[in-house]
Image 1 (cartoon, helix red, strand yellow):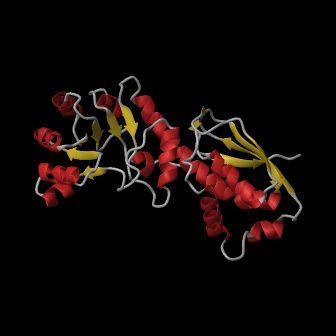
Image 2: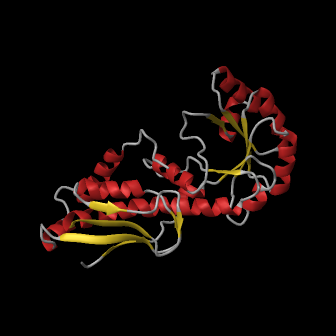
Image 3: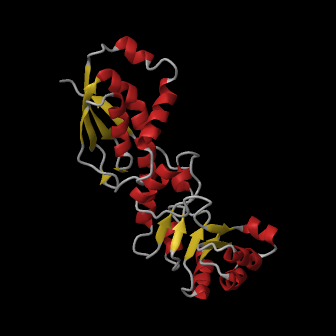
Length: 280
């Protein structure tokens, strides 16, 4: 599985390294490591993970040593046990040590998202529902973080404010009701119109006005099952709000089409991955 073709890998790597190098570069490696020293090592998962971000890791090392030699047998989306070697590399020691933190930070963060996502996917297995991410992403990292959720088995929700309308409670309040808000979105020619409802009596108004997707907000399993029955397959349904790993199975089993979880990108912890020197 690949990063989006329009994602600027070189630009991301250059900006990330510039942030770390500052105006004078890696003073530690320049002072301590001989210019011609070699570094051979392995990047290893120290806990079970879902892999994500390996192409970026390679790009960091290659940016500072175009002649670096790298091999790997794992790919983004793979689930691997603790002790798995993710990448073997051999290159200029100064370059490898300078790139190390940027490469690890990126892979630890993206694999952390993928690993949490995989746990949620497993917890809702066999329900027929699909897991969605949200726009609760770190500014500037949305494309990468949403890529990582796909590597964990989720589907992407909206990428931004531009690719679908999502009419939430504040939109409804300002517009004067669900029906007027949806009707304006329809009149604007928006193809995907997602409408948040938190009460059963809002469902018919939203669908009747032209909603193409209902977000059932903060409803318990019983209310979700009732809402799904009322919708009766006319539009996709999405359970959202306060979903946890220990509750997603029951939520997904209500018959909803999707369950969205903000913490996949908002709160996923980094996983433990290290880069260790291997003596010749």
